[in-house]
Image (cartoon, rainbow, N blue to C red; front, top):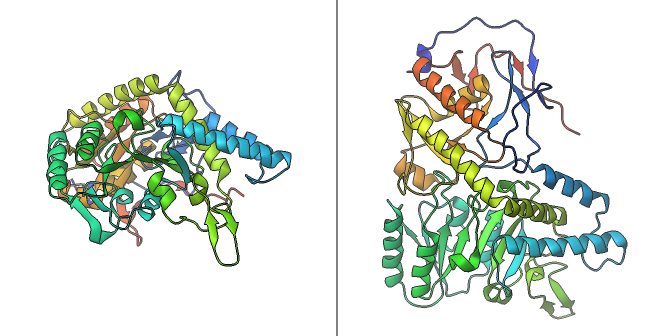
Length: 458
């Protein structure tokens, strides 16, 4: 099927349909009863068919909407917000207390030990770059080519060994064992993926961490795609650090965290040399803090950190129900897409691996970006296309771009059915409108009746 084969339908009248920023103003099934509710529930979006549907959100792998409880937390913090640390006023002291309590909550969320540090960062990328900044001068790094760019690129190239994309969980263990057996003993850091950013497959973290310990190596876990969906416990997994971000964990307020061992962090120069990182600044030298403050120079994003803690608390309370619900949705989605001729499911470690609710796929003969645009325009479905910040993996396994459907707390069973039905109709009948490439490379539907411009929200 090609776009040129799809007949052009008459252009609609000149009246334009605006986006619907509020709810649908009509009853809609509850997204997932008994689970934390996001601020996006019942968000209405217009289609090219002059209908308004509730958004089917399959883009949780990129970012998640805030939980309603997190939004309420942020509103409460804003009412009494003050800059943290060293302030004598009520607002500063209250915000400082919540900020430090947030540190404890985040540490408990990932099973931190009593001696572990919780350093607040901007996101997972920032957290892993912080750890790269703290590497001892003689440290070497081992990573996989299948890693997200945030876990692949921060390390010094001359001291980093990248392993090929594994074909199974056992293959990943074999590759690491072989690499460590050929690596001189000393400071070695192994960078582990929690769940693949492209496929959602959960990696054999405990097995890989065990191999690393056998060779005296340390491990850092990129849990950005894992922590919102599965429990993460540093001590049970046997890893030394974990990095994750609020924007994938229902707290998109600009905060993430690096949690783990203190020795490399306390021995390294401050990540952000500034006020807050210092104990004493003399005429000739500076005495730097140890602990999280050493790397949190300047005024920290206290609101974001507290929002992250609020999300962690909600996810911990509902962990078992979240996992069961998302597993059911994932099974429904994967089976539905796998049953469509011409749809190819992307996998790396094998179909039997646990999954956090991600199905990436291609459609024979159809550009992935066209698939995602048709799903958005005609069915009100949000998916993502591209290489998902894992170019080496996609180039090797997919041969280019794919479509990623990643579910979460804003996804309901009827959304899954709509996505499967939409893909099936696209494969069997093609788009209902003719699409053309715009100058910026995006696909545009001819005769689209919607006015997609919106005023600024301020």
